[in-house]
Image (cartoon, rainbow, N blue to C red; front, side, top):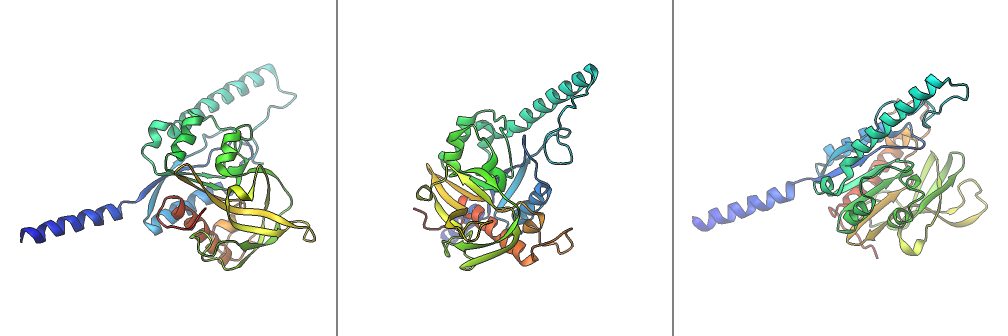
Length: 297
């Protein structure tokens, strides 16, 4: 009887460990362009966390009051009066302090509570409390998941681009593209088939990207706007960073790439594409957190 009880306790302990979800911190703050799809991204990431049961999400969100409707930060009018200039400067100072306070969630001390972070369309130079400490935390065995404009963040910080594996250079008009699957066994791309066609999306071009330094998951062999131009055009990749895992996908500009809701305004992509994209992101998260494995040099 004693042996049976011991075995039961051990089995329950193992089950408890297996059931404990990982913890992710989702960052959606911006100091540059702010994508309209960010609220949709937050919603879908929370839904993926709940439906999978594999991880939970907490958020680092934007303080209110700095962005105009066009996505860029507010600018002071040239005709502003001295009183308006002072009020604007005071509001901007207040907002910057609020952003710094929110980003304290990315301090090395607070990151001890998490297994990974997601940068979902972050842009600009975010006032991290400890930049090197942040990279050291990833390198020490934690997950970094970058989505879309994560590559348009920290342009003046080469070490961040080196961690990520590339840096946003520019993009053209939204187009239809055929993404070529480079790893049919990776959790992020296993469900996509050899060629995954997206009907309309904003496609990034990169600098400081070297395919020898990453494990490509999706690429294009034709320029997105100039189909007659052949080459190697990255779309999604993963890599190791120290003992940490990094997953990045440049896709995710449009709401109808993220969300399967058929009633989304100005929908160009079939909901099946959104479902596949969610599997792409979920598989990348699972790999980065070590929940699923893949052969990555």
